[in-house]
View 1: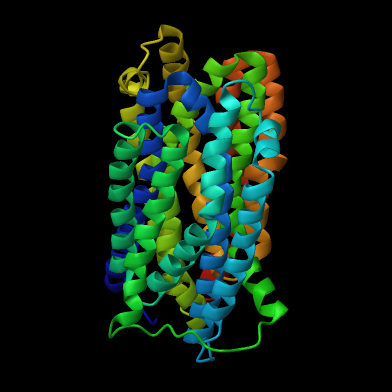
View 2: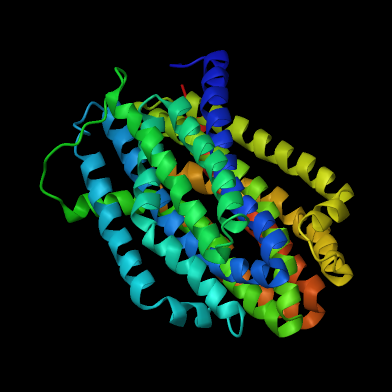
Length: 441
């Protein structure tokens, strides 16, 4: 047995705690935007943000896909004694190419996308302004996400965390300056997020000037099979993040038909508060990736098993504690984002928090399962879990329950989806866990 329980737990706590703090910082970007916009621009601003935030999630998700996929490929190759030096080069080139496509979309097609996502009337120019700003910052957002994951895998999780915390704090400052003294509206909110990622990129780049740095950009011919391998290993991370974007789009369109803009504003508050818990799950999932990938590369099955057990206990405990806090404080949370003191908005939001947040308990299991399978190079299981969450079950569930039970059905659809997928994830993990355990000497 290559690792002891005590050693694994110590390393698990180090990687996961730092990763969770970093991802909570990312979620504060969105939550800060939500609060500042709710105060500065009211319900219309919240509606525009909720329609627009899907674009941010898409840009963010591609950076995570390449970062996690590339870093997983790097960690496995390195642990097996292979030359891993060209993986970072492939990842950065890949990220730049994809982000340039986002820049082109932001330059030429933002109004059409905003309309497609449900923006119209006075909401349209607000949504277009936020979307275009995010898309034009996509190269910085993408490269930052790639480097943060690589630096974490290069035994510097503290710097990766520091970069995201610095970005979060600067985003809050920029939000205040751009939305209040300068009154830049939705453009200011998007600009604050873009500049916050710029701060993060500057901080994380300091890793390349430290003694512990083992990441080197190697001049090499870009090979399609390497890009495909990176995408394959990171595909579950992409789909997990896209699940949020897809859910937003589907929920927004269904809610617009049921309750109009005020319903979308309520969902904006609920979904963006939920991002805090989702980001904690993402942090645990990203934190275990270096450990699980190393265990897979070296054949240390005990390390894999123990890390998986710790991760599951962590996310279930977080989910239960946060749900209890949210249930008893739902009204306070709703009022915090309701600057116009609209009673109906408060009612919709409070009800939504108490129902929707049940699903987050099951979502934690799904995040860990998907990340675990990706980290051990089993992309099919990882992608299957992510696809079930993002579209296969989620979309029909939202449409059907929304039609039958209106807003109660909309909130319940998320719960039902995550519960069903958690059952599938548990079954797949049980099979894999038993296979790993039986092979352990």
